[in-house]
Amino acid sequence: MNSQINQRTKGKVYLVGAGPGDPELLTVKALKTLRKADVVFYDDLVSPRILGVCRKKIQMVYVGKRLGVHSCLQDEINDKLIQAASEFKTVVRLKGGDPSIFGRVGEEYASLLAEGISCEIVAGITTASGVASSLGFPLTHRDYAREILFLSGHKKDGVNSDAFKNLNCVGKTIIVYMGLNSIDLIVSELLEAGNSKETNIAIIQNATLDTERVFTGNLDSIQSIIKENQVKSPAILVIGEIVRFYLEMENLKNDCSSILSPL
Ligand code: SAH
Image (cartoon, rainbow, N blue to C red; front, side, top):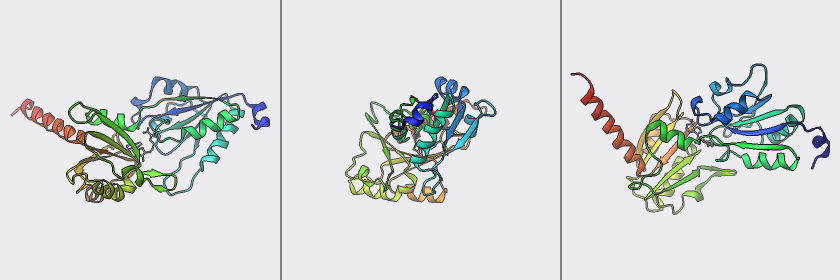
């Protein structure tokens, strides 16, 4: 433990989830924590409207790590948080979605506790839940999916192909975070594993934001759909029968609106 820093430590660090983008999906606890923050460290997935809830004139520090572009290494972020806790009472590390899901919160939590710094995780709504509510489908349904898998398309040293090897999609809702850049490999692994070409997939860009875009297809078509529509990050993949449920609900909504609309 670094006793020099520890002696000076007076602050507490909150590792806060900002939700998937829509500011209304911020939890009350996250909002309260942001409003008392003296300094906020944020990354790419936090929308400007959420940063806007903080008090004026506090320090806002960008520590994003866009895929493939060096900005701030994890160790540097850990050090910045430790340093900030010695200078400020309330330090917030704000992350997209839920910090405990593919959010590297574990590294930050461990490094802060190792320095004797008081630290708390504030849950956020993960993108999977945000997207399900925004589009209007459940992640589980007794007739479509009894299991959910949250997978990452990316791991520390590149594509996370192991996660998709021998993966049977039947009866599951599979949510792939960070899957856009690995789509070719994901599709080939899933076909190799014996899944039908007709297996449904949706890709959602900017979920829950005004700029949200949704595309649906299957294992055969999704790569060209992504290319043709120039889908960009952040985007999340939803794989499985639940996508068919979503399409059925969309049809119902269209049918209803044509019945209800005046002739
Ligand atoms: N902790 C976050 C996930 C971080 S991993 C959470 O719980 O949601 C980063 C990935 O999350 C992105 O590559 C993308 O796949 C997904 N993501 C985050 N925000 C998103 C959004 N608004 N729309 C679509 N995907 C999003």
